[in-house]
Figure 1 (cartoon, helix red, strand yellow):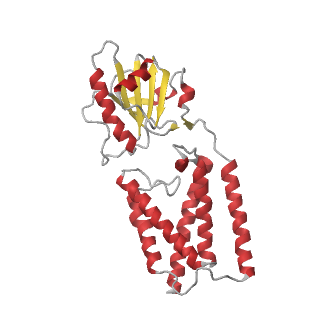
Figure 2 (spheres, rainbow, N blue to C red; figure 1 turned 135 degrees about the vertical axis):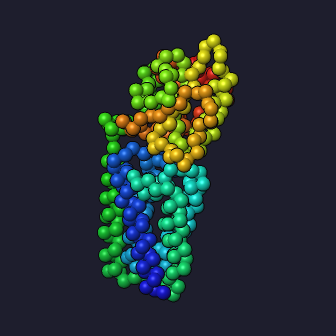
Figure 3 (cartoon, helix red, strand yellow; figure 1 turned 90 degrees about the vertical axis):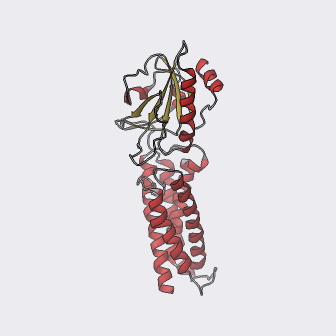
Amino acid sequence: MKIANRIVMTITSLVFIFAVTFKIKQLLTEPIISTGFWQSREFYIIQVVLELGLAIWLICGIFRKFAWLIATIGFAGFSCITLYKALGGFESCGCFGTVKVNPWITLLAVDLPILILLLIFRPRAEKFFDWPRLEHLIACAVPTFMLLGFVGYVTTHYEPASSTQEYEVVDAQGWIGKPLPMLEYIDLNSDADLNSGICVILFYHFDCPNCRVALPIYNEMNEMLMGNQDEIKFAFIEMPPYGGEEDENPVPQNTQCITGKLREDKKFYAASPLLIITHDSIVTKVFEVEVPLKLDELLDAVMQ
């Protein structure tokens, strides 16, 4: 049983190291789009440091039972979060940084199996605070804290640029009063024109819960305003990664709104839904994540 517990804790440690490696890669090569502290770059760095520290703790043998308890609680929490993302239709669990893994795969192949193994092969005879030899404690603690400090420093001070030839972080508020730069990267499904007149452009991700709420509402707004003298064009533009054929399209069927996709020539990092109002291609108003869901609120934004 003791050998089995060591094997399980080593496997758990390796999973943490694998996840941390790709999270560090993402922190150093891609911008992090924040919609609050829990999605911020700072919280991402905290996750990296804590997961790497726990990975080392699990295999160093110090306070083994306490380390097992923390890992078990952690994977119970991971399982709940991954289940929520799986049920919500998210494209990726977000556990492995730049590597996109379906939440159902992560839940059924990683989180739940490891949680079950940790519960079955737990350290039974050991105490929670069974103090190790001083030299063993120092030999493990000093290099670990040096490594964690180095990782924390590097990920904090080496943030990727917000704009390159390959990608751009959407600075929507900074675009107000300027031509919408995303227009040249939009492929429409019709001969419609978004360069003239008043346009309400809703950029969405297929797996975004807030987008699935907003799209039908904006479709109804379009139907209510059709035929008015000062016609407002409504457009639904899907941002990559696109939904596959098996994914339910969040855009209402038979919509009269303009539809299209944002090409992958240049990657735009943006929180969704992203609502941009333009007048003759000039940005006049921007909403990110929290978009107006009432017609009078939208009309006030259009007329400002």
